[in-house]
Length: 161
Image (tube, rainbow, N blue to C red; front, side):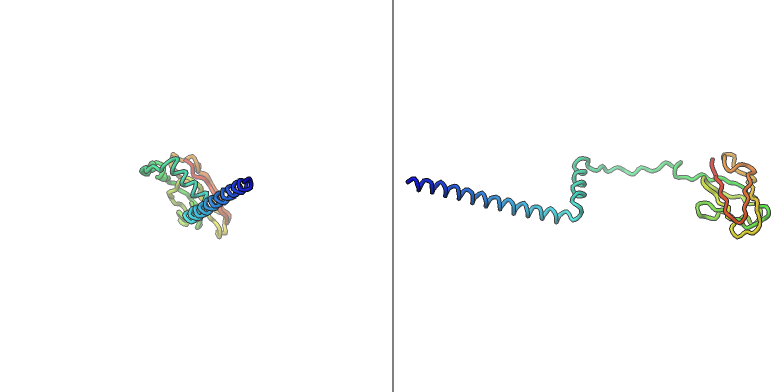
């Protein structure tokens, strides 16, 4: 009878282990299927997917109308300066890659904005003096009667209010 008791206890233990094993296998298969579904649903980087979901949960997006930039910032202020080339030469006046004028007539009034101005004298064989004859009163640079000497090169000067 003792034998039967030990046998039944061992059988009971063995059946419990087998049931537990089956349950563990079922949980593992279910976890694997769940992992596969999650990976297929998140085609992009899982971290990005998690971050977007977390961001939506923590701070839902607010639909706000776009703010228009102030007009003062979008408008570019222009000034006029008058340049004279002595002797008359085809010196190009360039700002931001755009040719504003050519000093081929000697004196030229030009509309400029803040920034750098280039006097391009490449290809001009003689020495040319370019003078600022007139400028708007609001401009600090260039100075009135400022002279730049061009010797077949490029000279830069600033336009500052």
